[in-house]
Length: 101
Image (cartoon, rainbow, N blue to C red; front, side, top):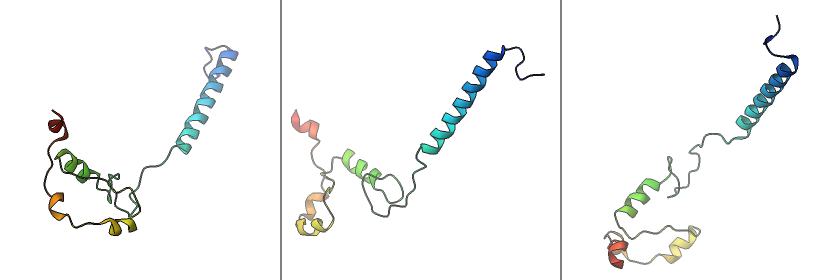
């Protein structure tokens, strides 16, 4: 008894080729896709959601109308740029939409 004997020989060959190509494509896609993200990056960042990330805190402060900004430059520049303005960081600002109206 042949595999799928109800099909014509050419149809059976076409089906087997399609199955082979589909299997090869599935294996290639599974191999080329990136793996799961790991939390091996020890540098804290407001862009990371994982173990060392501070994205939730950043989003919470942003939604609470605190005046915050991300430091986009190298960290050694932060010490040179620091100014004594402690009080302003802890006070919420007016909502930007309310200020425009």
